[in-house]
Image (tube, rainbow, N blue to C red; front, side):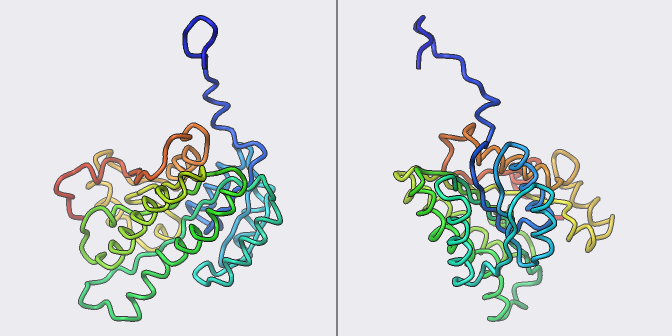
Length: 266
């Protein structure tokens, strides 16, 4: 694109951040990173479908962003089929984005990971991502393309004690994203995953004492843990046209934690 003088035309970069007229589904949008993501997307002009297992949480956030609420168990295939049917009916051809923040770590020594725990860990990290990609990407493709953003973990990039099963599931999620980007790229669907380290989410804030937060901060080059809005900011970027040529990335948002070699124990 030229400005007539042989130079590249000026670009309105802030306009590329806008999501006006686009519908985005946020899986796990009822709290923490999910809620902040809904707020970020709505502030950029998107219409947001907030999905959570807890209907009351989904409805609360939907009210905050003037969006839609939907309750679903996203591990269940039938629930996900119904969800994406609803998303298609709600947004029609304006459905352009899907964000999936769901994931819980079962932290325990690998010797204590039994068959049931192993299955649950992979379900809560990977199964719903498989559903979202396989069911959601074709919808975006049918609308001319769009962006899918998942939330991974530094545990999928480095070995962390007592997180072997969780790390294995997150590493598989990272690879699923790269494969999805390859398979759906020709249909103009971008697929990326943000990779946080330590985040002071409401759930963890209620669970961990200050000594643990101080320990996690001390292992981070920036000297502190992240807040949910900082992860949401990265998701907003990946959902926007500022990231129009970004796909298949495993994008650390970790304060420099995984840049350390070896990763410091915490």
